[in-house]
Image (tube, rainbow, N blue to C red; front, side, top):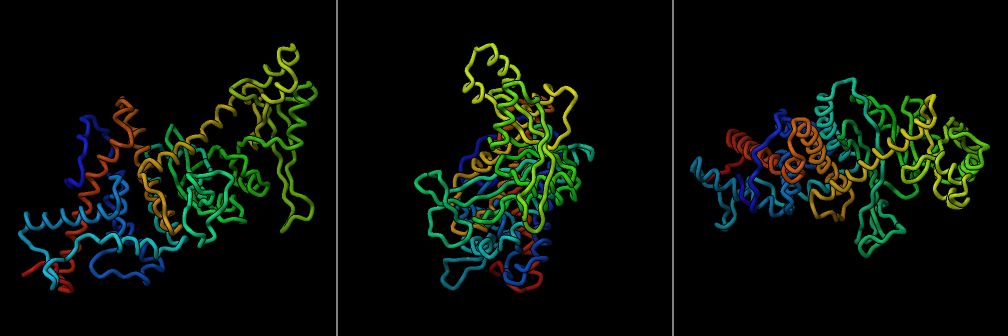
Length: 451
């Protein structure tokens, strides 16, 4: 509809699932309803637009992989031509006879809108809208479907001067800088589909696990049932493990080679300890507000999909040295109940934990949606992560349904999904502009067109 740049022709094959899964039909109504509940509604009162009109250019720019300025100017120019050709209406010009009324907010106004959002308002606004999309997708899998809960952190380089508590130093060098902003992403996984649900800005000196229990409660409130959670070893905290266990969500995480883990691995290699052993994970005495403890299972596994017992057999047959055997062995922490066949259970744990890498590839997909990812304001960065997550979640379901119908995966890439999403997004923007003009002309608050 809008020729801002050349667009490839969509392929003939298409998925036969409801197109309103993109959530664009109710996207404007949801945005405006949610903003009315926030303090932003009192601080930001647009005269010619609704609040959703400031989000459309940002979402369109992400989907089209262009800047917000190009998206805003291109959409506005199209709407000017649209009203001229279809309704023979000329937008009202200002006294300089050059500028005229805009149908789409300018880039500066879009930026002002996003900068006014606080961190809590971003999570309430875009988090609720993203969750509405996740709930709609989850209905296609049924209420009895069990999901996996995935958590991981990601870093984005920051090149400006430190102005907020969210800039942190890292030992890694990201394209010439060691200053980063760190975000934590929560997602759910089932049937080869990964849906991002929440994002959190992390501060230095604040526990990175504190948001996980509340996020789990929110997902359960939205009818997401979980089998277990897959986490990295940096979330090895007794309070977190106990809270999730009390919520009946077992965890699976690789073990750091602490002294007790090394001792269990050594004893297993020397045939003085079993493959699976229990361990009381507790805090130090005097921990505040109180000391917590939880029972864990330590499961010995091998690297590179090698069973631990085969590595032990190679050591006793003197095919490998002691140091080589210790180097090839590792362990998992889990609160799951073991099977009767401990060896099969250890294989299953190793295979299951690989699902967590969908979180890593999910962050990569978010970065591929748009090349630009540098922002001065952390709340704007957080808001855009949610908008990218909406595109990513819709694409995940689109790909899942297409593969079930036998469509080749090359026709279900993120590129083709964005092309189909653009058509609907453009229709929504045109309809939104028509509703705004009709409302304002009826109230005679502002004349959009020359008489």
